[in-house]
Picture 1 (cartoon, one colour):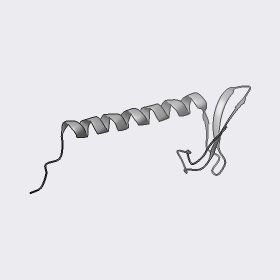
Picture 2 (cartoon, rainbow, N blue to C red; picture 1 turned 90 degrees about the horizontal axis):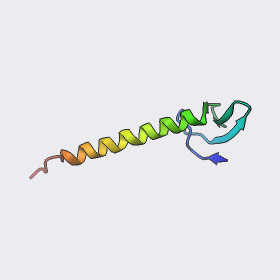
Picture 3 (cartoon, rainbow, N blue to C red; picture 1 turned 60 degrees about the vertical axis):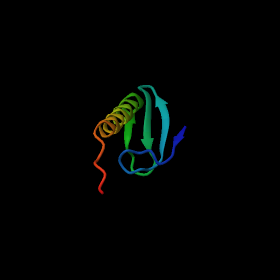
Picture 4 (cartoon, helix red, strand yellow; picture 1 turned 90 degrees about the vertical axis):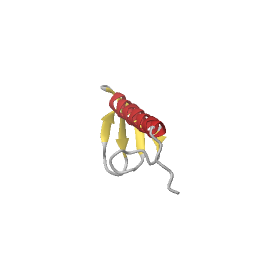
Length: 66
């Protein structure tokens, strides 16, 4: 399976594959390599941080200039 423009290092194209050690993702452009579990964990953590950031902004809205 291909994941276009998803490489965390260079925004290149990742492909998902498996070998005797398990599933992994690898970037076609820069060669970035990561276990699939590690990549999914990092993606979930980034999404969680972004959600927390949006919630914090909603709790403290910026004052409107008059």
